[in-house]
Figure 1 (cartoon, rainbow, N blue to C red):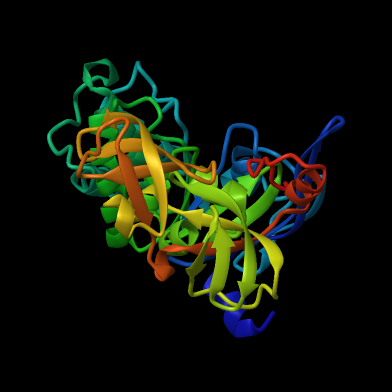
Figure 2 (cartoon, one colour):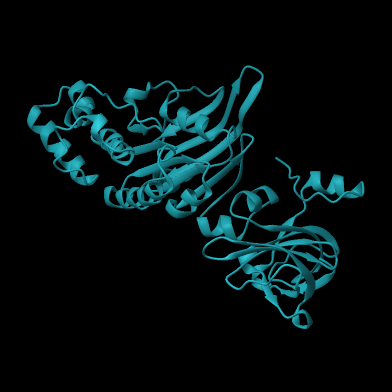
Length: 370
């Protein structure tokens, strides 16, 4: 790695492997976190994302590999000497202390002068929009306010990196959505690195500069929210990030693909000729038209109103079940046409597991190689 690239990275994980008895939680994971980046570790429960965060924090040790901070190995550096702080889902605030003393706690451990403590606590309360709350007790605060105090306490020591382990998990939906925007705005104003753990796709898409999607201890894809959503690398990514129609197809040639009994133009190339592929079409990218105008035809099987759109299942003549999101409802039993524009058709290599099943005669595109 060049010195320029190294200077851009504040955290580097190099060939990290973590084992718990006979269970391998992480498999030779490599990851670079840039300075001033909001990076999210996303994945299902048990995928290894929290283990990764805890190793960066120093609460777990890797079985093998190196954790670098500012280019130096910190494997043996205890948590309290690392230039970072952690905010947990359970905020671990001290109920017997006032809000002021909760925030000041870390500074008092460092024996900072009282004038400095007062200045820093005041700055943190201003940052989290809780001015005037200094003397209140923790029990008097709402869940969202407690979360802000936990963040203020973590930031008061001016860490270079803030680690957040599902900090919004205990909040209701409306409060969680509001705090997403506040956290992103806070990160921009502070200009420090946030590493955020969640299993919530909406949180990841809303807040992140970079998403690292993990499954079974391995990185499945890493990129911007737009890249992850629009150009999934495999069926797991396509299925985990939002909803998708994942359909077996054949790449006829560059920019031409056959699936659901019809041949479509697409914008992908490099998949060879007459090769099996998986085709991803997001439900919001499916257009329902009159039957005679469709590229393929089908019958609406179900309709559910979800507030901002209708969710419909359409069974095509070729036997493919399509999920469709539209602001215009087609009633159950109606015959419709389906159209998809080339730029909304995304091609993926067929996973080895799916190929093996397909050869045996079954059709299960939900199986992906971990």
